[in-house]
Length: 195
Image (cartoon, rainbow, N blue to C red; front, side, top):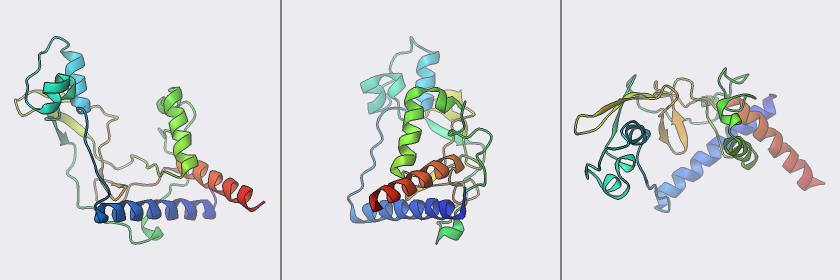
């Protein structure tokens, strides 16, 4: 991807982050957690005959798969985030990572719905980030003592103002696959609107 594409991707991420922060500061941004965690679903799948523990509203309403009590135990501690002060603090890798969701043949692209979503993210300019360096749960623990192993592909970065952070506190890299498609889509859109 050329320098203009990288600059566009960085500017887009900073704009979305600023809009998210402004919405949160104004009180117009609401975050609602609905449903259980991946651990709750994994527990329910592994124990289909398990009855509701009634430990939370999610479990009482949806059964074990809806439980919101599970807590992740991460492979590494999360450092405090260091928010970007400008484009110089953001990274767009020169190439897609080995397991990039935008790479042809990726598990994400094998699913038709997910493949369409990935493309729509890029065309809409909705930032997408690389998981490289982000934390993930080794296991999930329920307050009643149940434990289930984490999924190695279940990255759970700390997210602030629409920017995920690596475990070391630096912003996660902007996905190179997303940036290439998004910058091209933005350029095509600009060209069409001028002519």
